[in-house]
Image (tube, rainbow, N blue to C red; front, side, top):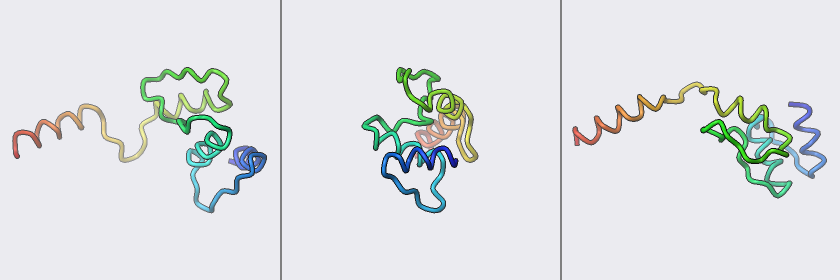
Length: 85
């Protein structure tokens, strides 16, 4: 996280206590004039080949986070909601 903080400072950013690495990287992306898309490449594909965070982004995009629901769970809940009312 220290390297992310340093990069943020170079872009004139200060990060709040408790800000996650993902939030910090997205703030850096916006400050650099890019999309704040870090860890959102759900399909496993990203066309931002020059992005400093690409490798970590793709790994984080494919790693389930605590509390995330699987596609199967979401589909099951939607079907249940449609038929119960």
